[in-house]
Length: 344
Image (cartoon, rainbow, N blue to C red; front, side, top):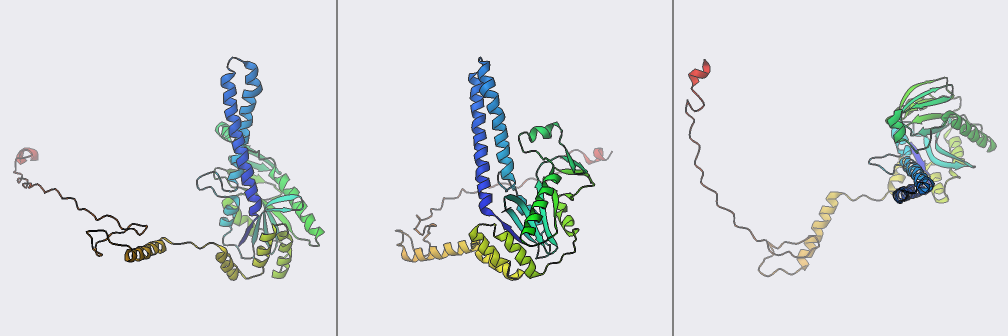
């Protein structure tokens, strides 16, 4: 599966979220100062202390939540795009995923292009028990969960948001002269999320590990040829940055096996540890041949450092003589009590 991410947009979002986070930290520090200095001045506490505290919590939580979506801010935190790619790893090669693409004036987070049409993937990172029915959602988190998610964006109504995006994208393609089946899936990617039920919904609702089943279950009457799918994808590629658009347009026109070779060629070469050791040994040999010997040493026992310079001769420390320890005497029959008494 080909995965294309608008990295320029992602970098801007990461910088923006970091700025929000550190502004929030500054507000929290300012609120602590206001609460400390205004202990005897209630007006200072109510005008600066509490408002700065609330604003600091909201900004820090928003910044951290936004960066988690892009895989930043935690140990082994994966971005939404990486999670989707891992789940859809073995789908047919003509399934192409475009992440964070702005088409017209609308931002589409994840657009999956298939021979059967286009599918929008709407990912929600809230955790808790989700109860859905008749395109309405209810999130149960409990007191601890509510405190933990305080300040983070609300879930809202994913069905309503996804329906608007599907309609907007379908209308945009119609304006380009293409009538394409367009649908969507609502995904909860938080490992602590649980879906209690989803009845009579306009779009499928699933957890991240069930995404492949939802995608494979989508069928339409359309079956685009390779050329037709390339023409559709070129419309999406035009909305990417110019340099990236040129590379992606070349990638979609080559077969899968050649595409992998091109993508591997663009990656920086990885130097393995054994190559580094071999290079260090060659460098040491060259430096050893060119460097003078330390006085009192020969070429056989001359030691060199990592930089190739000779090290001082190794001085062996005298070993301590071993003490003569007499063997333990053999244990007699009555050493641990008389055998006859133990048997009784």
